[in-house]
Length: 139
Ligand SMILES: C[S@@+](CC[C@H](N)C(=O)[O-])C[C@H]1O[C@@H](n2cnc3c(N)ncnc32)[C@H](O)[C@@H]1O
Image (tube, rainbow, N blue to C red; front, side):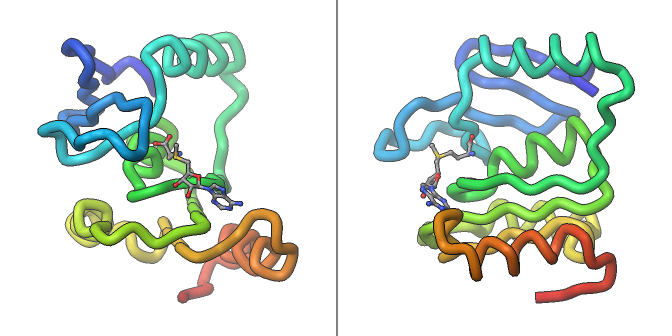
C-alpha cells in the first residue's frame, strides 16, 4: 500500500508517479504531472490507518471533490480498488494528465471521473454512486 511512497521536499513519488503537494487550488502548479491537495501529515495519517487496519481493503471507492484527478491517481496507485468513481462540481480546463494515465494503464473501465456533479444534489450524487457498483456500466 503505502510502502512505495518516496518523499522529496514538497513532492511525493508513488510507484514512480510524481505528485506536487499543494494547499491552494489557485496556486501556480508545480513541475509534477499530478497535483495532490494533501499535506504530508495527512498522508502519514492514511498510512497509519491502513497499517493498523490490515483488513481494510477498499474495493469500491468514491471520492468527492477530485479537481483534476490527481488524488484519484494517488488512491488508485495506493489502494488498487476494483471500482473507483470520482466526482467534482466543476470541470477543470485541463484533465489531460488523468485521461492519459487512465488510457495508458488500461483503467478506463474501472476508474471513472465525473465532473459537474454536485455532492449536494441527490439525483447527481445517486447516479454517481451507481457507477461504483455496476461493474459493466459506462459513461
Ligand atoms: C481542494 S480540491 C481537492 C482535490 C483532491 N481531492 C485532492 O486531494 O487533491 C476540492 C475540490 O472539491 C470540489 N467541490 C467543492 N464542493 C463540491 C461539491 N458540492 N460537489 C462536488 N465537488 C465539490 C471543488 O470543486 C474542488 O475541486
